[in-house]
View (spheres, rainbow, N blue to C red):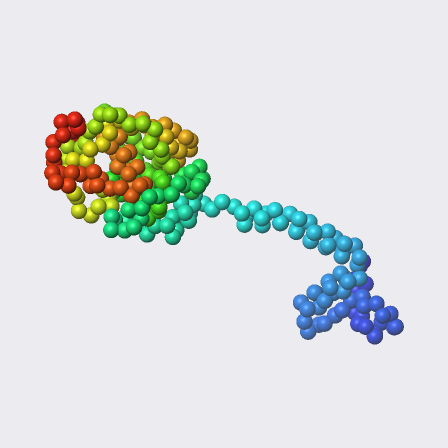
Length: 259
Ligand SMILES: [Zn+2]
């Protein structure tokens, strides 16, 4: 429909009750919108077009809204959301005075989740860059679940790193060994001296979050000691539990001392 260009108001159009155009010289903006509204009210095809456009917009926007609402959060937030409420702070260790360190940890329900991958990567990064540690178990950061990270650079052997979840010991050697200068732990404030006898060789089955698959890890010597130290954490056991109470440096010839 076209406007007729004649200034007409209801009652001044010779009995024609249909309002064609409204004019208000004092307020042209209001006048403009009022005319559009009148045009809209009187024009069926405009109403149909508007309804179609609205329906189309709703149909298009629903999947977008659903996708936005269910979208996976950015990577950086995933691990943090998992850690929230389960640990103090990445830089803040739980010590052997706290219950979580002396408790048997529970299995991880979903080892292959992106949260676990991110978390284990963060733990490895922590060992690599922040603390001079070689292993970090979940209870040490306040999480009573069965997983631990290992990061160690061994001369001649290279970098060994794992993010092991729900580990199971498949076998150990009869042969024993221990570190020449004893062990230390990020959760033990004051070093406790003495030999910590360990198996020389260990075979562990676990889900490695860094590789995203089930693995069987076999290690000997120093890395085998690290694996046993971390595995112990999942059962509330600390290295000094293995030290001879009477003679910490008692020399057992069957236990090989390694540097
Ligand atoms: Zn430890």
